[in-house]
Length: 232
Image 1 (cartoon, rainbow, N blue to C red):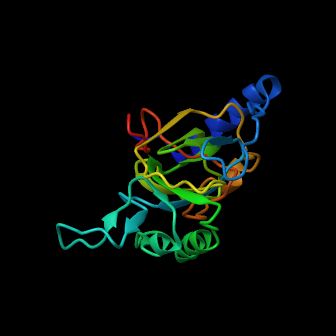
Image 2: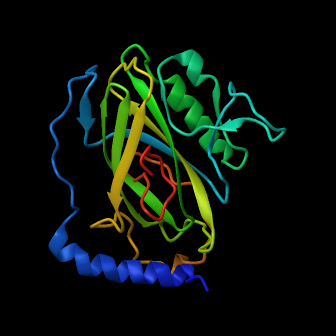
């Protein structure tokens, strides 16, 4: 039997209390990269995450040929280098309309003369979310680091299901090499959580947002998650 949401949140709150006094936030400072560099690392990356509750994919490629009548082909990993290519990407029907708009704005607001969007896919259990720690790139290859934590108490979730997550990173470099490899690494749980669990009893069963978005949470894949990386 899957643990209840209330039990998960309660255990997370106890873990946060135990860890908070001695571990800090686990963040490390990283040297910045030169804007436009073909090789670099960003310790505070610009990343958008969209969630498709119970779905198998969150992002679709409208230009890809489908071998069936199921519609557009899901997008796995890619470097988006032009506005024309960005226009061929869309989100799955299960993604909220608000997040559909955010994806479109994110792609349209990218300056492809100086920036590149790295798109990847991940899977995660419904009551959890990723927090991105960093992203690094070199010609033809992108890697990111993440950790995993419980979602806020007011986020709707089902403990027995998994959600598809679409990840869009805006890299401060105009990369012109096709993506030949990518990877991800991380830990679970995060050393310190960003969610406050002081209202668990009041909010543990209250439905809320179906998505997890924002540049301060995580993303990625682990041994128990379906996140992108050529080696996974």
